[in-house]
Every structure is written in C-alpha cells, then in structure tokens.
Image (cartoon, rainbow, N blue to C red; front, side, top):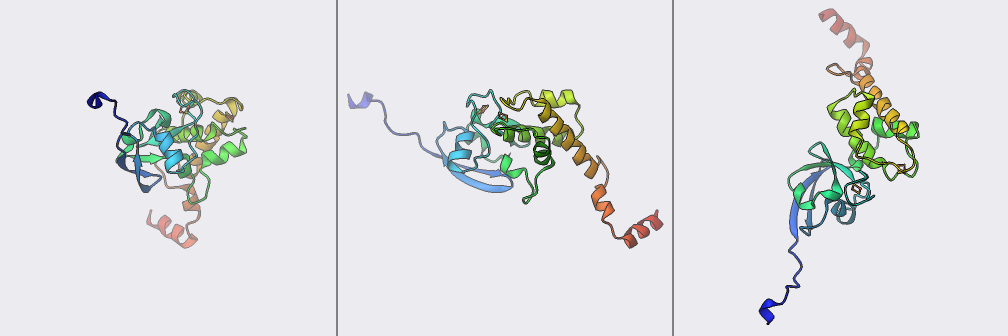
Length: 194
Ligand code: FES
Ligand code: FES
C-alpha cells in the first residue's frame, strides 16, 4: 500500500547561525551532519582534520565557547548561537600565536595532521591556566594522538609558548612589551606621580 511505503524524502535542512573565529556564519545542514563535516565541506575551514572520525584522535579539535571538543562527535546543529574557534582563528592578523611559533621552532610536528588539534587544545589550556605543570599539559592533551613526532617535543613546545606568553603579559600585570615601548617622558611622568 502506498501509505506504508518508506518515505524517500531527505530530512529537511536546518538553518544555523553561529560565530566562528569572530565572524558570523549562517549555513544549512542536514540534522545528522557532524560539525567537522560542515566546517570542512560546507564552510571550507579545512584546518580541523579528520583522523578517526570517532572521537579517538583529537585531530578535529575545535573550541566551542572556549571548551575543546572533538568536532567529529558534535552535530553541526548544536553550535547554533555558539562561539567557535578553529585553528584558522588562532593566529592574529597573520601573526602566529606563540603556540604555533613554538611548535615550529621546536619541530613539534612531522606530517602535521595532528597539529591543529594539539594547538587548539593547548590554547584552551593556556587560556585557563597560563602556567601549567608538565603533568597538566600531558593530561590536557591526552585526547590528542600523534603517530609520528612523539609527545615530548609537543609538551616542550607548549611549555615554551606558556613562558613566552607569560614574559609578554605576566598575570595581573601590564604587558612588559608595552611598558618598554612607553615614551621616556611618559615613563618619567608616571614615576613622578608615584
Ligand atoms: S577525527 Fe575527531 S577525534 Fe579523530
Ligand atoms: S605529526 Fe604526524 S600525526 Fe602528529
């Protein structure tokens, strides 16, 4: 009977509005599509990588409202109204983030497939805990797998980035770099006022 035939109608697409790397995005997606699939195939933000597609490798890590998630395990419809950060949003106007710089300087990558996930996950850690212990770094990055570099160089790179960020902006203080750039007259004036 025609009434019992399975419906061949595709599920209706859903309209989603979200913010990615500070920019507003509107897109249509299938309700079953993963965030990773939409990021890569619809929005052409291909920095998040598909390693396992089942939540085991961390190559697809992005931040949702500052929290690291495996984007292969999140439905795209879940990010409506959220604030996302992907690896494409980590550098600041073309200037590499200290994490990116330290990964390069410390040769903390080989094939690079895992690197966006490590950097995004490490950023989430340093944003919350600017001076983590080695144990805290290893714990935070435990969900990110690397098949070629080994983990020591990655941990060293995160430690180096933390030190670099701290040296520019010690917690609770004025960024040293800015202070150093203060005109001499201004510095003298502020000293006189003290
Ligand atoms: S691709 Fe998402 S965890 Fe591996
Ligand atoms: S650098 Fe190749 S998997 Fe990590």
